[in-house]
Amino acid sequence: MIQTKLDIQKIRKDFPILSREVNGRPLVYLDNAATSQTPQQVIDSIVSYYHGYNANIHRGVHTLSQEATDAYEIAREKIQKHFNIAKSHEVIFTSGTTHSINLVANGFTSLLKEGDEILVSAMEHHSNIVPWQMLCERTGAVLKVIPMDHKGELEMDAFRALLSEQTRMVFCNHVSNALGTINPIEEIISAAHAVGAAVLIDGAQAAPHMKADLQELDVDFYTVSAHKMCGPTGVGILYGKEEWLTKLPPYQGGGEMIAEVTFEKTTYADLPHKFEAGTPNICGGIAFGTALDYLNEIGMEAIANYEDNLISYATEQLLAIEGLKIYGTADNKTSVISFNIEGIHPYDIGTILDKLGIAVRTGHHCAQPIMDFYKIPGTVRASFSFYNTEEEIDVLVEGVKKAKQMLA
Image 1 (tube, helix red, strand yellow):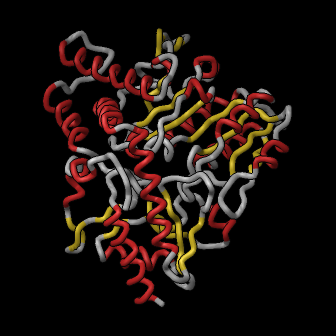
Image 2: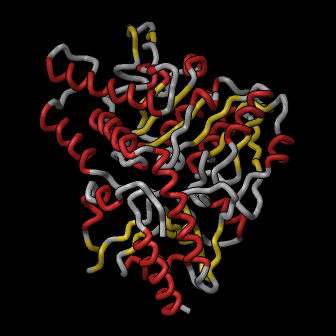
Image 3: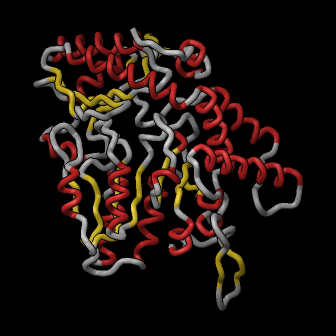
């Protein structure tokens, strides 16, 4: 049995959706890597904004605008504290991780030249591949890939061999969305900095399961999305060191990001507003702060310990099924189990599991290079959060067994 100090049944009552049924069966939600569920406390904060102080921010002297501005900036400070960021203006609100990565990629267009090299790991989400390919097309820079092995671990000797005086940027996810591998980002950051390269870490999959200390990591850029951390969709943050954010040009032009506008010349606002053009997702930003309050009240260390036990139990139970193979067997992993059953397409398994009320993800998980590496069309991905239970894993295992029996 899983040993935990968390009151899981009490926690589950905070999530209204977990009490619903799907196809006449209790919902077993195991698609947390795609998006987490939202506790009532976060839902209430969204309703409270629209019900009580819906107004635009930073521009109005009236009471509602001031209340909304205060709440939004308090959320920025909560994010700063959660990730141990030195200065609040190093927190840039975006629509999520994809937006954040594109902001950086666009900014580096003027900083790279033909022949410069950028490194990206072999286990990236498409959002941490395609923007850099586009950047290379614009600048003539060369994209090189840090290889991985069949356990789903980066080949660090190969990474160090790729680093050179031509390396300008290194990009890597903290945790793989398709494999669950926790990458050795401390080592990656240190080695990249030794050759003068900047580092962006995609923290979207790590942030729900562990708390990254961004000052201790000394990372240049770090990205997260609120909807994977019990928050709303359409909001996230880019952390950037002040020195880098000062160098990068604005990503979008418009209101809020200006200091002064004339038809002859425009000057830009100071950080963070330089990168926050237009009306933001105000209630989303505020609710993100509420989500962090919720997670921290439970305790990120307690969450990590519970989820480690949960994934160990799920791995053991799934591997007992004959013909089942797990992709991603790194020594250091979290939250995700990707698997196939020999001779059965993952989509067919996912379809049957849905009929049983079990929500998993099937396909390439926006990580086609990983599937090509393993020479498979995709996987079934079960991904876990702290509100999942051992009993739900048992339901999953029985569902997979039934799917195998029906499809074999």
